Image (cartoon, rainbow, N blue to C red):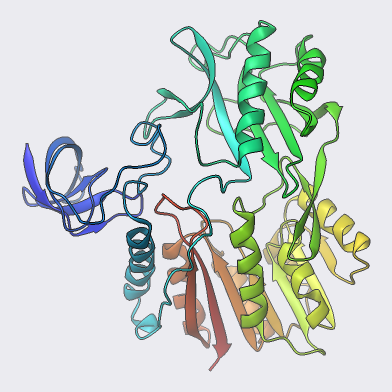
Length: 440
């Protein structure tokens, strides 16, 4: 048993402090607290260990009762027991720590984190594993670092129609006797349920199964009859092992497979599989911020890399002479092209890996980057710098990869002028950032 004074939180939201000659990570502990913890694991490579919180000896004034009943069991919102102002402070500090690791970024000011308008009911998408617990079929999540399912019935994080659709789909499957998939024995059928809603509450549901099954159409019709806001039900057959949820292209069982989303006057087309920010209110703020930091001129050529369904490109298009989006997902590009056509926008979307397609671009005045969590490959940044855009706006969901890439861009002649964090995931340690860079 250890007594630990918590000094910070790690990237997963666990408290960290010195104990027994190591940095001890304690889930559920907050900075400023003194806690008693039981060691679970010691790293054989680094002076670090992970421990279970046993008792809070000196609580932080920021500690509060978490609003969600599943808090502490599912692990999805590890900071929900901290007052919201404290969550925002911790997220800003996380970004500052990431930048501080790189001398080239010393002096870059990190602004206060932009708060989300709501701490609960903010996610427009939910992904649940289907599980049998205590004789019931329920939507579940795996507990941290395990395959132990936790009942997520009543979770307060997804928007109401998103959560209601997921729970109703699982109940409908159970009523029809559709067997739940067993990951270890590789038996059964229903594996996951994914639901997504637009701002009007129109909801898509994806049933992920190990194989097609005869009750699928009846399940879809029954679900839509019970939940009129569900506009489409899709079956996705996924036979692969591992943690990838969605498998093939999917088959529409009933209704449609896309919904339209209005984001700050920009209409997007979203399929159930398309990547889109899960907090639409904050996504709208993020796109406006990108437009401000891009400082576009009417004659500019804008390049939007990792453009997804086209949200940023379509938002910024009226301010530029030409917009080119590059995205690897064919489904996302198809959605972006339909949205551009409906809006009579001149945005051009190209499908393929960013690095080779970027090599085909001859000129760009401003570039927006919104890469996956791992950030950009070095070749992408080198090619980008060779284009010599006047401004770069970098959107990132991971402070470490953002700081690494800002450092690489500094070596290529680009100075980071500001970094603005935004909270798209209240209750978690995740933080979105937008960085503005210009040529030195």
